[in-house]
Amino acid sequence: MRAYYVYCREHDISLSHAFVQPHASRFDELLEDGSISSCAARIVERNQEGIVVSGAFLLATQGVTTDEILVYPPASPYMPEEDSSRTFAFAVPNNLPGMRWICRESLAQGASAYDYPLSSRFDEMDTLVLFEDVLVPWERVFMLGDERLSMRFFQESGFHVHCGHQVLCRYVAKTEFALGILFYMAETLDRASYPSTIDKITEVIASFETLKSLLVASEAGAAPDRFGSMLPDRRPIWTANVLFPKMYPRMIELIQLLGGSSVIMIPSERDFASESSEAMERYLRGAGIDACSKTALFRLAWDLSSSGFGGRQTLYERFFFGDQSVVAGRLYHAFTDKEACIGKVKAFLRSKDE
Ligand SMILES: Cc1cc2nc3c(=O)[nH]c(=O)nc-3n(C[C@H](O)[C@H](O)[C@H](O)COP(=O)(O)OP(=O)(O)OC[C@H]3O[C@@H](n4cnc5c(N)ncnc54)[C@H](O)[C@@H]3O)c2cc1C
Picture 1 (tube, helix red, strand yellow):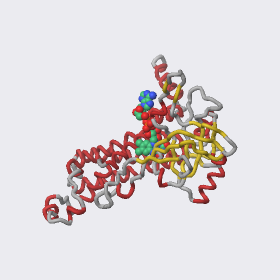
Picture 2 (tube, rainbow, N blue to C red):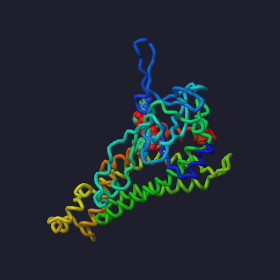
Picture 3 (cartoon, protein in one colour):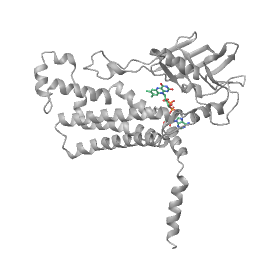
Picture 4 (spheres, rainbow, N blue to C red):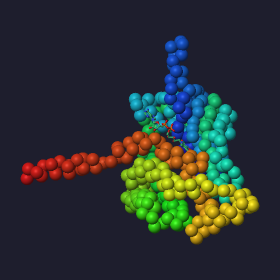
């Protein structure tokens, strides 16, 4: 792992990652001869050169545009085995023999940055990557067989904390951007001082301030770990991981609620160059803004909230760190003040006798 880290750093290697397997890999099929068949990813052979892997992984975002991929299916927490053919972690170049990539449809509907301000520039392709008897050389195998060790690696390396800190920076940046869109929309619609607008935007201000505070708290509580890296305080980060998958879809809903029809009545760049442009200028202008500039803003609001690209973003934020119960469990089990909280309640109940 250390050698690979240095290799990536020195050669400027970009990586996608895949932790999850397709749904079909979770079903076991009973065959006529009584045996059980499964398409779950597994090691089919170990030889002198390395391990041979078969199976499929998703959802390697940017998979086809990076140099290499890190594959690390989480081990089963139930009855961990010491030599499971389904437990491994490795990183390989994207073009090894036997690897195949299946992409979803592109969400960039066009090339114009006016018409598709986000999707034309920022669509990150999601992929399903197939391994058909792929030989992974030993120097690229980081973990093999031992499910307990595989689980410990996630915990003891501080994976979810280091990664979560970077993710929390993203939450703050995205919330600030959504807030900017909402404020600007309210101005151009001449609704900035309506109580219903203030209610909506204040919800996002509160999210923004909460996330920034959690980021500061995670840094203020940082301490060196046993490897000598500064490890941020995990509880504020995991709190943010629980909150943001609910905050983000709500921000998107608020953009739709504030904008109404303006989020969809958004002519294209070509329309503004047509014979209808004069009428559009008259009827689609906003408060203190011409129609073409106002439409640019609302095309952005649409691309973030209502286009295919926007829908994918919302799904991404809902599932980034796994499904909600997994994310909640991480914070729940890390919460060490449970006894102190219960103690306060017990002390209060006892106080009636004093
Ligand atoms: C846009 C996007 C990009 C992504 N990019 C990447 C990436 O680059 N790399 C990567 O590794 N992963 C990526 N992911 C995958 C992400 O890690 C997974 O979506 C996430 O772990 C959840 O897994 P799942 O999609 O299979 O959902 P599921 O596990 O199927 O969950 C879907 C729903 O089913 C419920 N559910 C699941 N199991 C049960 C059960 N046994 N009983 C009751 N309810 C259940 C869940 O609570 C949830 O509500 C991406 C996902 C999205 C949406």
